[in-house]
Image 1: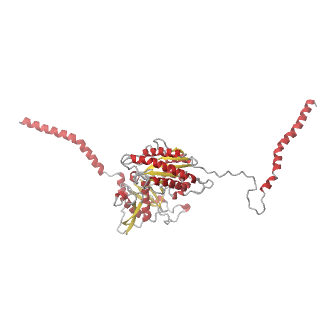
Image 2 (image 1 turned 120 degrees about the horizontal axis):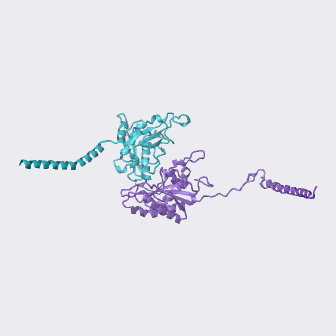
Image 3 (image 1 turned 45 degrees about the vertical axis):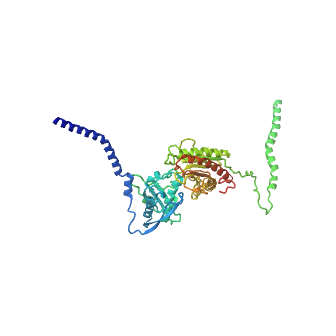
Length: 231
Length: 270
């Protein structure tokens, strides 16, 4: 009796060891997957660190005009009024409207910018040049093509034009760098005219801005430096 | 004095005046002609000046550089597949097939055709532009298939008018090579778009503008043609469009030909 009981216990232990050995690789894989999900990417961390509080209770609620794809014509943009608490400061205001643009319309089919793209930084130089620094996803997730890329850029430009009159022209950077094109077609080495009639501040000698632009261009986190416009 | 020396002296005396006479002939001839010249160019007092009072070389008759060469640019290539559809349709593969058909249609209309690439390589934007910039009397057409847009439609693009600003000083920078050609490019694009709109329902009647990198460095009338789209369920839908697109492009180029006068040429009115 005792001998047979011992055998059963040994058998059960052996089965447990075998089952454990089989289950172990699955458990290991599952742990790795979970760790990946939990661990934020470098870009997410930077986004959280650099993202200022965009709205304050003192900001008045106004009707901001956002430009997404038209419901009637997928090759055109249409303006939509959205009630937003917008700051009077052009930099903060630009960030507020661009983040709303990135969030997209109610109908996600009408969005112009990819859902995973984010605005990393926005600056306005003394000469009225706005510099919008977007995450890599703007370049990698915007559908490649002349029409789709131009609609993406136009939606950014027209939204700024409608809501931030202080921005004269716009330079789009991707992760702090100037790219040749957005996704193979539309030229990102150029400036895009936003408000050509925006008041220009007093220039320094030789037409240079009175204050050096570098002062308002801090290097973003992550070791990359914002490339100053050269044209 | 020996006889031989005398003969030599005699010969020298004869030869020297002959040489002097020969040397003087051009002067004599020009002096003989010059009195007539003032008579031919003389202006009546008070009459409008019709010719400068000095000899001139007749100006060559104004020559128009005809449109002879069409540079076709199959976009992307190599490691850059361009737009990709959910069904695995790749822009890079399609534009090569489209190029073959456009080339055939243009050659049938008597145009010489050059391609920026003929295999699966990916020349730089500048290398592609260089091929057109090295020609005289060329137009440039870059071919694309989009990711979006109403399937079965075709759009033609040029750079926006804001790109037409040329730096003063007469030097045209490579980065702004398209600037003097914007108006011509728009005429060219409208001609091609008009033909395409007749064939492909839903396509716009007029060309559109977009900040296309490839066009910016091209010193010739330059357009981009984009078909919609790689999102179709069956590649055959796009294959069926190609002969019509090729034919419309060839007809558009032919109809643009008479208005092709390059900036800086006699009679140019870009």
